[in-house]
Image 1 (cartoon, rainbow, N blue to C red):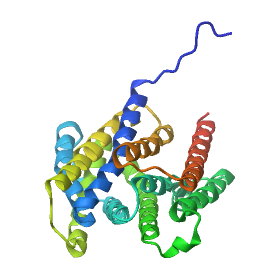
Image 2: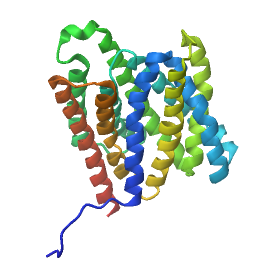
Image 3: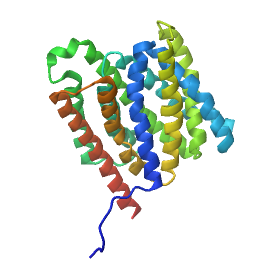
Image 4: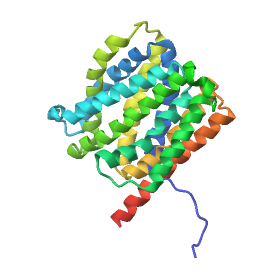
Length: 303
């Protein structure tokens, strides 16, 4: 029998991860505001242009600084996937809501499990397949509102672009795991990925950017997502990751969805309708199902 009242406790590592998910949740709202003011391709480039030197400076001061990491071809593949993912997300967010964006991007947790099985030869369970089916149903409902007549709607195009960004980032996560296994210094790895992403983003942005107009509000949004949502959130994530496992951390980071939807409501006035809420519930259920199953499986394997 347990004496005394039970109480909920959050250790410092969990607190770091919660703060990280909070900041990443705000990035969807800031990005929605930013792409409304700045060309989406230019906005993505500005994010990396501001974040890269800051993170490299932090790595130089606090990490095992080694530029030979840039000889790794996988690192450049990770940078390419990261760049393409953000360009797709920003382009899509010009025609969809911040609420839809975070839901359609975070469904990539399910696809990561599938890709890890194919690329990293990790075991796949029936719960992953069930989660995939549930998640895809949720994606369909969120993207179309259950109305097939919206298949030619501009908002559907935006939703599909954001969903595609999530798929690209699923590949990014899997290949980043391969790179991290080779380069265990997380801070150096993170800053290097941002630098390769910047270098690859430059020619893409130059080709596809249609306007270089940069109002002050747009630049402020870009600086916020670069310094706070890229630099600050990554630092908090790394601090939390040192005390928590990768899978447990990913489950805590699902709070990003809650924070993103909350700020989309408070700042942008986005109120999901009943069908969107139902689709959101399916997507969140799929993500939680796959994440918890992976966590339980790894704990049993460790035991």
